[in-house]
Image (tube, rainbow, N blue to C red):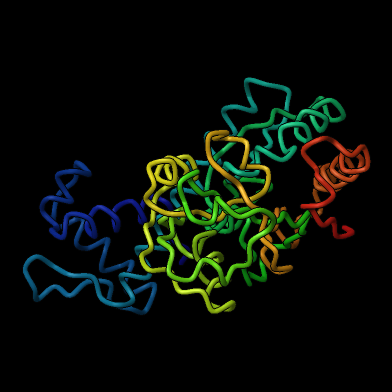
Amino acid sequence: MSIDIRQLRKFIAVAETRNFTRAAERLHMTQPSLSKQIQQLEENLGALLFQRGSRPIRLTEAGRRFHEDALAVLDRVEQMEVTARRLSLSSKRIFNVGFVASALYGGLPTVMRRLMERRTDLDVRWLEMTSVEQQDALRRGMIDVGFGRIITGDASVTRVILREEQLFLAISPEHRLARRKGAVRLLELDGCDLIVYPSKPRPSFADQVLSLLREHGARPQEVHEVKELQTALALVTAGSGVCLIPATARHLRPALVYRATQDRDAVSPIVMNYRSKDEDPVIEVIKQVTRELFAEGPEWLEPAYNRLPSF
């Protein structure tokens, strides 16, 4: 017997209230009827979902996993309903783009504008999310393509490195490293107070930075974790530490001092993510538009600080 959406909603109500009576009240049904339907669900699955001997009742290990999956299914159904309603009101196809904020400083808005010029049937929607969140959003169909900075090992997602951007060190004018000229080595950050972002979810750009420093033998004296780039730069301005940022972000606070990193592996990739089995022709249009933009050599695409792999 297959599981329907109504069964999932009833199961979730019990899982959230941890009480059959309260769940039945929420669902506007009788408690005996709800208990019987949950038992039927367990019989169909061949697994106990609740430990009924405890008060409040608890989910079993199978129940906890089933709860996570049920929430994901309902979330996907809600997304499908929203998309269907939107499409019924518009002749355009909604194309959802996930992005990390720092990707906006390097041409992504131009790429999307040119995409819409070529594909006038698209209605592009922007969703800011971390690189890790993009992986989950792709699997669940919440976005059609994502632009992030972290390379993961998820086999269901294809990753294309559009460019690798040199990291820069952001420092206050009073910092000892501000007095020297030229590029800095990561080892020179040994003993410095370091500011990293984002603080969560992990892994993130923060972990990439911390891993790079470990590999080069630099151990920060103290690490401050903040939510976003703008906050990190504000703390650098306040003299709370130094921060490694992508090259295109160094124009955000002109009052700070910026030094290029000297180490060849001190780079941050811009990664385009999409579903591995997705044969959507829009993906190829995005790649083509991006290649054309790079070939034009825009001012922000500084050859000294960007590597362009073929894709």
